[in-house]
Image 1 (cartoon, rainbow, N blue to C red):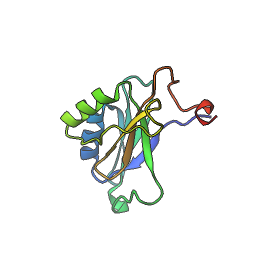
Image 2 (tube, rainbow, N blue to C red):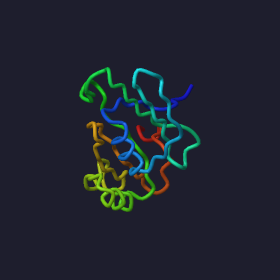
Image 3 (cartoon, one colour):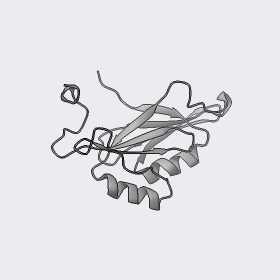
Image 4 (cartoon, rainbow, N blue to C red):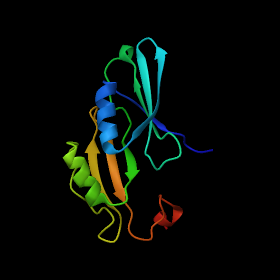
Length: 137
C-alpha cells in the first residue's frame, strides 16, 4: 500500500487554486461530481501523480481546520530561494527555523487561505528524500 494524495476541503476553490499554484503545484485535473461540488487534483511538476486534492462542497458549511488536522509537509531543494519566490508571490512564509539544530533540516511555515498549515522542509546534504527510520535512531 501507499498514500495516493491528501484531500483538503476549501472555502473558495479559485482562491485556494491561486495559493497552491503560486506555491508550485500544477492542476492535474478537475471533477464536478454534482450539487455544486468541485474538485481539483494537483501535483508538483516533479511528481509522477497526484499529491493533493482540493475539495469544494458548498452545502457542507464552513471549513474547520482545527478539528484534528495539523499540517502538510513539503520537501524543497533550496529553502531560502523558495521563501524568496513565495514572498514575491505574496504567500507570506515565516523565517527559516532549525528544529534539529544547525546540522539538521531547515524548515519554514506558511498558511493557506483556509488556515491549513504547511511545513516546508530542506534536508541537510546527504539526507534521503524523505523521513526514514534512520531519523529516529
